[in-house]
Length: 451
Image (cartoon, rainbow, N blue to C red):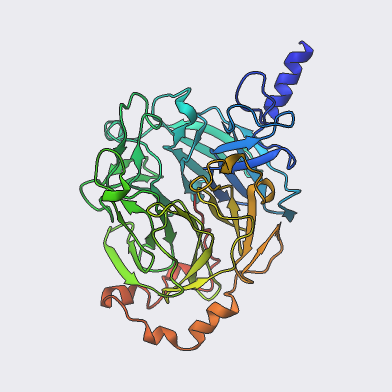
């Protein structure tokens, strides 16, 4: 074996990426790291897994002509030990499937796996036929990718993958609302099309269903986010936040789109598909807002908080440089300290450990055309937020205590404010009157993830 071949194989093991002759890595050193965006993440056991996205890094002290390149590996970070955003060890896992940005991740915690769906090929290169890819974790921060065949292939063949959908996972199924398909999201697609309705995928049966004409909470939706909240209602509830709704088919023109604000929240039962709406109070985040990150966490007293950060106003071409938390069951917003390291959208957020939010990547490409080629002030593109202290940090604490609401949030509930909530109707009030039995205070809070 030649020295050159040995070197190539060694680089591959470290997560080498992209053009021949390039010395690029899926997990570059902090000194060579510039920016990461459009990746998605989830948590299984003691590991956070990061998939997809594009990456800008220094090569021999400069940025190459492509500026950004797709990530060829799946990344994982160990959550069983503490680390800082500067010294964190990011493992690379070989990925035989397509290397795309802005994918949708669906997490099946019961089976220790997650699925990658949709997304976009960078520069439209190396495109392949549409498949659902499954990653099965090995419990040690690694795992394997395999194609996952649909149990109803005829229905699957009528489904179109895309980007910028609102997506989340319940304990039994994946839900994917809206999005847009283009010539870079699907092989041989001649033009852009706004996707309507909602797709569901059953983890156990492998069956896809397309609810375009039926139970979707929105006819179309782009740039919004979805969060599964397990502890209210008989089946949990899916909250749909932000984004905008262009007409079905063709380009997603902003001028003809309606926007969803964050003052009135839409949510639905993932089994019955019954939709509800409820007005919020407090420090309501400014809207319109799209391409932001969202995650959620259940407190020890049975409440639930939904974290929202960043994003952009597509209508006014303004970046949102902020963070908020929506507290349930009170439907009250609280403004949080501004995130460090500047405004960003296209990031992903997940709960890590018992009470911290990990924000991964993101950039300002709306008002700053060179956003991806400017050094990210966040080391390795990572930011951490402690939900109990409401503080941004540069370190992950594996030994942090269980999540309890911050004083400012708990104070709201201590003033009998729930008695003053103006419910949309009796059905909504009943959903939040008591938490479901399966998530009582005697049970450990379920994992909460977002991609």
